[in-house]
Image (cartoon, rainbow, N blue to C red; front, side, top):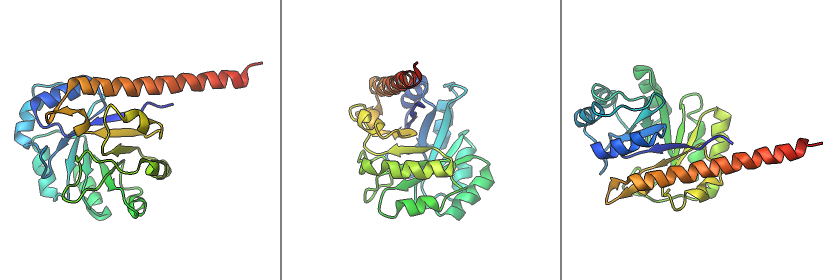
Length: 232
């Protein structure tokens, strides 16, 4: 099986970024929307000058209902690879930003009874999705999970669209094994790898080890099953 991708989000200090980049995960999130984890673009640029990310690592900027001016003001200082729209943006707004920046765009979809319909409206527009919980008064980063039994439906729609689907909300190293059974393309985690509101290197390492072991064990089981099927 393919490895579950990891996005470590909500990095809001130099130490946070240092830990996340050093972990080697492919996606590193920075929040530029109103949030307790919001970072200042100028300050963030100074952190990035001191950190060299891997060639395959990408910085993801999280925005909520931003104007093009807001996005441009961040890009002036921070070399983002991906823009993640985490509000109630419509397809036209996302297209406009995608054309203006030329960057990859992800759309967050907040789980509810109409979420799949909304996801379908971004077909051929979004380059990826983040499925998150919706808590009154917050757009994300709440540590609250939604009903994970809904994950297969989101995964199926993402597969139809040919783009990755990340699952967010309430994931921790202690429960990530449960969510891996749903075979998500990726997980997006913020508070679940923090201690006292800061990224915890030990929790990050534990998370990565659990995911890698799960994927390796399932891959080996698949190989064994195939060998038994084709043995003479």
